[in-house]
Image 1 (spheres, rainbow, N blue to C red):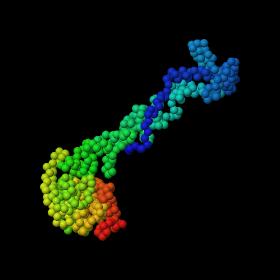
Image 2: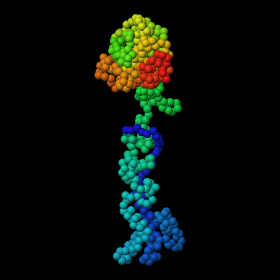
Image 3: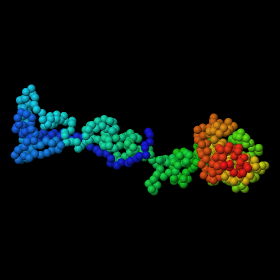
Image 4: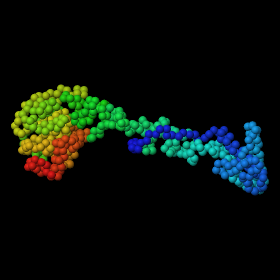
Length: 512
């Protein structure tokens, strides 16, 4: 079922309950009194008239006319009896006399014809109604709406039982039902969306946002408003408190850990969700096929790297130590996930991937490695434990740093150098997620030995991760990485990659 519309009313005590009939004894008593008054007037008038039409409304003596309702009829007010018993007997005698008199007049007319008066019509209608007790007598219209009443739920006649009036419509009590669960609404308060009624609990279940971490209704703040956080790409809604209560966040896709799912804990303190874990690259040996595939991607764009640059997967601590030892360079904060080294250092790399022990990755083997500078680039370091597409994006970025240094691009400002490196990272992701979008070579076939391709190509989950990494690059808020990418990407789209790189070499800036 479709949600409900945003026009919401919470109604309290909205319904009118009633009964269409009074008791039969009460109706009979009222009718007999009315009929008695009618025939006293009729008998009096017929006694003074001839055989023509009856004349209504002549009075004499001390009886004064009395006007009732909208009937425009006049008759004498009834005499007050001395006691109830004598009054009832007198009325019965007068009624019997009136009926006998009426029958006698009918016999005097030829062929049973007689003049009919408005009073006779009233008498006939009243006598017919008295024989059918299923219809209410005149004067009961205050108890129910006039006309043929249909139930707004089942579209059947409501009849003469209890009814419920709401939203300008009438219902059998059992037909006024919740749009969501289909059960009757018996509470005095309910929620209304458009013309659809809901139990308040059902409506809250449909419309009130739930936290995707703790799976509870997101509470209101001090101003009575529903306040929550929402991831800009994944649209994950969660309580603001989870940003400060040590809830785990995936180091790759940034989603918070749900209470009904467990993330994997890496030995360096990071957390990894189950989806990112499926294609995570854990050691230097596993990453070599992907690294060579991205070098081939560069060669396919006539940007071959002439030097063999070592590539190592490292832990967070080893990467941070290498950043401290590097004299130059601009690093993405708060956490750098890749580095193009220019200085000689000893770096601890991951030799053997860890194994899974419960929700932890344990048993990882590392070894220190002396890096000797043989050219402008000493090595490329990448953080271990990231999904294949994110690892590849980092490699493409760092290889562009290496290419610029090897080709003699010197003293570029951070916006230009980081911006053009981010463009190459974005282009590689685009070739993987949206192959053929820029007529660029794809590395999927070349990296077929990677963890994702072993299963026969990228899954829908991995493609969605690739789209997220592209989203991260395009919406980065930092001046160098985000602002630089947008300026570089605009230049490449307008002039092409080759002309943009040539302009940077000559001027140190992007072409306008």
